[in-house]
Length: 520
Image (tube, rainbow, N blue to C red; front, side, top):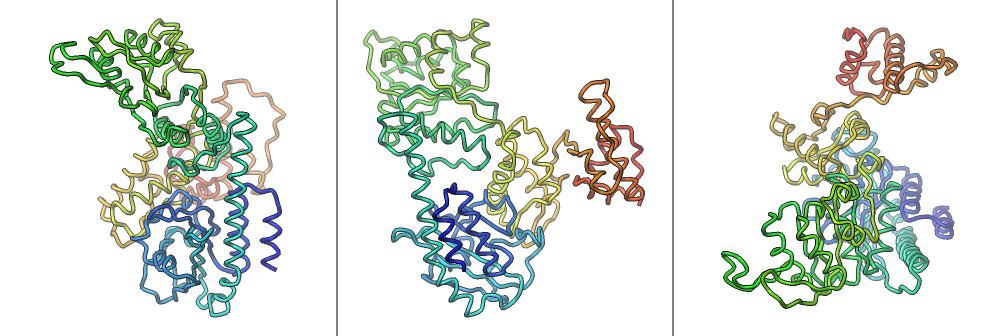
């Protein structure tokens, strides 16, 4: 019985993502439908928390209620509501159902219900069925009967997540009683590296320690700095962002600490600096490694005793400011080179936090891509915007030197190209690999694939004398040649067997010296 399954899960020790995923999976099996989604209301948007039967990048999308009349109608009703197969209201999952990727949904039924937790609207539950008549009167009654159990699962999951966070903070920082605000910052992803990072941020946010965020260009250091501030005791006070790389050497001191009248030509009056503006709150020093040495000495004084001195003034001023710094440079190397003060480095790096690059975050790239796809869909007024399976694979395999910022630009550029090439705004726009224009993508071919397909497997008995690149080339060459042999020289079918885009297969084959005959 469905209730027994939900009750069993409630008594099990499960994390929030796993519990939510098991919930939608069980509901999909129970109603024998094509897709189920659980969406949480955040302001005027609904964000998917768990999906089953919907493409993975849906977890990164955010659906504006005003732009999706079906979702708005579900929120407006207290009980289950059904959209019949001939409903004229657009479906928010058009082109996103696993069994019809990139295609308009065929005639189908939809059903949904509003979910309430502790007397407030929490979100919605939606169900899609490709068979007309699936959501009949009996199905609506069944959903109404199970609604309380679903709401109980959501409520227990929220409470357990809060308790886990509180236990972590108390174990890591004895005596701490405050619980960080949930949902602070728009940080997407469920990979192990990002989960560990968010836990670490929650622990250090409640302290007054300086934090040094380390990471490559484009990983989102500013976003994580905002998260730290929002989860801290200073969250109701200002967060002042300073881009140190944009400060001219001659003005850096004045910008940070202010100046007195007559301090320099053009200083016609007193002017407070960024530290005074942030009094009681937080200063975020982005690209701190770019600060001139003379300004570094003044910053060290502020960190040591909480004092600043306006340029041209003899009177020190007290400020109560927490410092979060960020850099994509190796500060230890800068110290060795003499361009960064060692004492300032040690002050700033009381609690260094490395931010993982996108290439180490697994399928988070698809979740983030989903967010950018939905933003561009709304911006361009498209019916639906999604990725082809080949494009998803390309995103997973790309190295992302520019990280999340580069991903955002890639998706935005691809969407604009699609529209500029005459794609209709009322069509389902599917972005394939060539639209992404990613250089250096090579198939992650698996030499064992030929054995699984019935070809004799080449054992590892022979030692390979050469570089790692030579070994990889040999492995890829063997896999491509075997796939072509199995498909009678048909490059398109060989590409599908290897799970790569056909054009990329031809490029790789040319580099490996395989004659790129197109065959059939």
